[in-house]
Image 1 (cartoon, protein in one colour):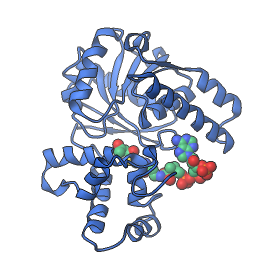
Image 2: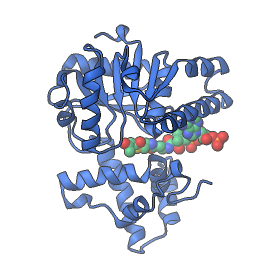
Image 3: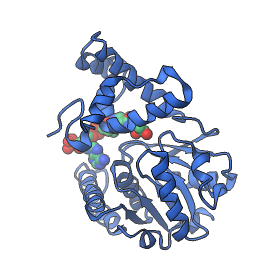
Length: 287
Ligand code: CAA
C-alpha cells in the first residue's frame, strides 16, 4: 500500500490516546473510524475530540471550519466489523496488557480488509510478539504517539522483527502527513526510546517522595523549572495516566531487571484508581 491509498484510519480504543490519535488523523484529512467496546466509552472519546477541537479553535491553533470538518470525518462504532470496514490502516490503542491486545488482534484479523496495515500504539510491549498473532507480521509495526497526541510532535515508528521496510516507510509517511516528526526505532525493546528514559524519571521522582527525601512539590518544581521540562514529573505522570506509566515499568522490570522496580507510591495510586487527569485525581486534583 502507498500513502496515497490511505483514506480511512480505524482507531481501536477511544481512551486518552485513542481519541487523541483519531483527532490527529481527522485533522490531517483522513476518514476515521473510532471504536470502543461499549457506547459510553466510544461516546466519551468522541466528546473528548469535540472538546479538544473546540479548544484548539478557541486558541486559534485551527479555524472553526477546520474543527467542524475534522469532527465530521470521525465515525464512532461499537461493532468491530463495522469499524474495520474499509480500513486502510488500523491503529490499535487498547489497554497496555499483552493478553488484551492479542485477543483484540484475534478478532481484527477476521474482519480487517486483507490489504490493511496494522500498527500498535503500545508504550512498551513487544511489537514482534504482537505481530505474530496476526496474519500479516510484515505489515505490522509500532506507531507510538505521545500524550496529548494533538500537541506532541514526536511519533516513534518501531520495527518488529518481521516489519517490512515498505511498512515502516508508509507509517513514517503517514506520521508526516499528520504533521508529526517520526523517529525510527530499529529494534523492538521495552519502552523503545522515550519511555525507556521518561518512565524511570517518573519512577525515581516517586522513590524520592516515598523515601521522604523531598516533597512532591519540590521534586516537580525542580524538574519543571530547573531541568527545563514542560511539566513536573508528577504532573507528567498525571497527564500520561499513572496506570500507563506503572504498566510500562512493570514490563521493563520484568524484562530488564531490578533497576526498573516500580515505586509503591505509583502502585497505590493505581490501586485507588486515582490515575491522573483522566479520573479527575492523581497526584494532583483536577476537579
Ligand atoms: N487538546 C486541546 N487542548 C488541550 C489539550 C488537548 N488534548 N490538552 C490540553 N489542552 C489545552 C489546555 O486545556 C490549556 O487550555 P486553557 O489554557 O484554556 O486551560 C492549553 O491547552 C494549555 O496549552 P498551552 O500551550 O498554553 O500550555 P503548555 O505550553 O503548557 O502546553 C503541553 C501544554 C503541550 C501539554 C505541555 O505542557 C507539554 O508538552 N507537556 C509535556 C507532555 C509530554 O511530555 N508528553 C509525553 C508523555 S510520554 C507519553 O505520552 C508516552 C507514553 O507512552 C507514556
